[in-house]
Length: 614
Ligand code: N01
Image 1 (spheres, rainbow, N blue to C red):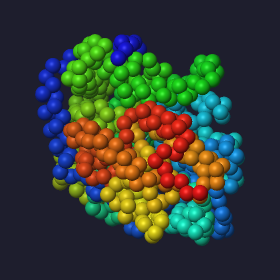
Image 2: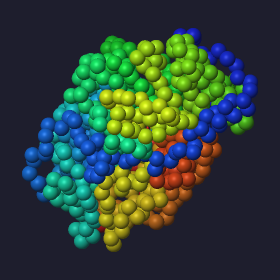
Image 3: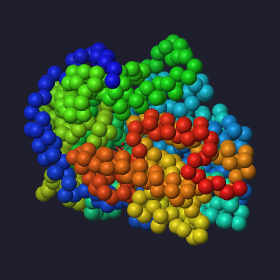
Image 4: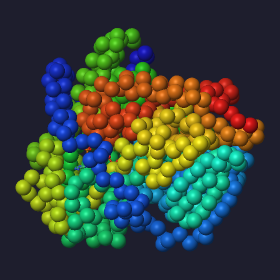
């Protein structure tokens, strides 16, 4: 361990003032807050929005230019990439770099962008520094305008990357895969779509779509509401007016409700508060809110960064945000300030070589102190003490994704903005006219669902199609109780099929960096197979079970943490033994360790653990 730097910027905002001594008191308080949420939890308490079925209208694409006009296609491809978000863009760029041009990129959306295509709600921005978030900044020469750029800028950047690297010629949009089967004789995947296409592909890349499938709360009556309603990832600007920068003028005479105060709600609520005639926020668990500290990019500084800076900065951010054993950090944001504060506490408790007990106690104590500082901050901003109390968080910092905002808390000072705590008295039902909690009905014209994305379902449930592998084996069956892969990429009996995303991969704050690393790793394998005339690759039974064991051991190490956390997507809504959610039972250790493991595996260049058929 090295001696940490002290946090220097704005001590009044950032340095906790209170020393916590009563650890047991905090443990009890936090456990009581968690227990409030436990009776009504689990992934099944959400309603999936499936491609077809009762709630499919919530999935309609408000940005689409109309139905697909491209005629049905048939092609024999080196690679089919499903998903045109950062993963599809990275895969396409890396394929081009190794000279492969016979590939297609499919997406349900009408353009590149993935998450940033769909999420255009007002206020949308990245919540990780854009210099580490946006991929290929050095290669594209693009300079983000702000430290935390707007969603519209990120979406435009996705389009410009696709343009710059010639990916539009490979794209087929507004197209959904309906089924996929392995043909052993030709060693090809046969992939069919809802557009009548049939592709034969040597390799297929898929992603688990952490934020691709929206969900509704499992509250009765959603379909009965006679006013207007939509999910934040399908924002209806025809109804609200304005765009993702605000100006929701059509809401001036509307009574609005929003359900959900996760990372999305935190960004959208200030905009709704500014324009709606009235706003009621239905909150089950508050999000921890630290200052945002956004700023325009210092162009001179950006241009002065040395070659290779982005990889170094990304590694540095990952290490500092996830690890408490390093003091050097290129990034200085809210994630890192908290990390540094914890490092300082560990150092004070045990010097350069703390014992495990000193380390654990310092981590816990400093977390309580940090949250005390943020709770004080709520009091200093929100003038109504009742509202302020509802907005205070009582769980350990990384139990939920931390929020960073300068306009969320002040929004509650408007008289037109109310907050209803549904932790103990959940929303009972939705009626034709509004939302019922206890014996009160809140009548509204618009309900906005900021209720997040499906996490706790199986891979095939989320994908909306099944995969038939060798000997008729179904992926829905193999992954029914959780995934089974080598390194998260390949699964036995499903040759040449890659899984990317949070499927037996790793824990990161910067998801774009995970995707980038995975795409590069996958294209290394594809490139080697194409060069060496390899017919099929898949893990050996031994290697796959070894990785499953490693993942299970990591899940076990996190069990106590996950169990004490208040329910949320990171602990599968409190159901820590339900292995369908890859976030709780299906991840390796911190990102930089996983990326190192992959890098070493590539450097060995032996495809260790992979059965290769020529
Ligand atoms: O979704 P969420 P999100 N009654 O699942 C609430 C990423 N992201 O769209 O906490 C009342 O986090 C639910 O309550 P609770 C980011 O990684 C990134 O906000 O479960 N409330 C919660 O408040 C994030 O993790 C950026 O008690 C109900 C909310 O709905 C991920 O996207 C920006 C309820 C769902 O929150 C998803 O965030 C935005 C009910 N019955 C998002 N049911 C970047 O900037 C659910 N809720 C990169």
